[in-house]
Length: 261
Image (cartoon, rainbow, N blue to C red; front, side, top):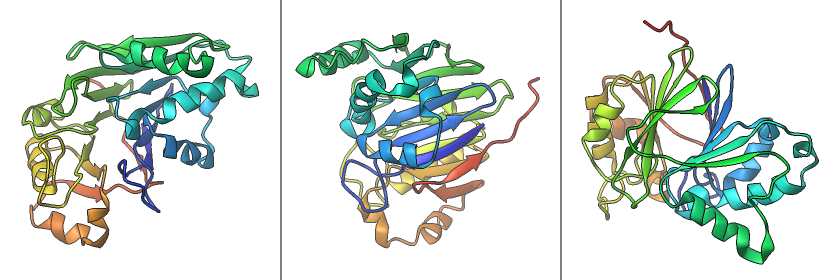
């Protein structure tokens, strides 16, 4: 399992951080975790085979997480690479995803759902297992951010595991959901002085990390407040029991393969 961070930032424009998107590749499939409009260019710049993408996960409907999806679907309708595609593209998210995409599709008669390949839109129920792409098991957890917000736990056929929290307020349930995963991608919007209950600051993210005990944790969805912060020094104050790294656009991580018991 390999992960590339395409967007480590937020809705606030930043010269070095696009808003949220993550490219996940396994030996059998590729999945996009969120897709902001600013991350589309990063996707192409990385040279990924976007036209062979298997699935897209939408954590919630804020535009810094879903804003690139209508543009992507508008492009796939006309892209030469997609005209001969036979396999379906699946888009997963919470309740309301189908209606939202129908709304985008109706704007200027874009017909986003009328693609040259099969397009499946799946609304996920929390805590029900599903296959997000070939060889990748998934289960979602409702999180306190918006009504439809979901974290997702992924396991590939090599038994590598990943949890992506996306935007979330503090909840201890996340720690149990991410218990001893190989990679925990967790938001840490603010270094301190969190102004909202709908996001995490560093101390809250570190609490979840210490309880979850992942092999590796990546702090992401970083507001510009982080720009003048010494990341390593601040993280060290919490004496983490695992490696904790700061996400940046272009960060690449490889998760180990393991034999399933």
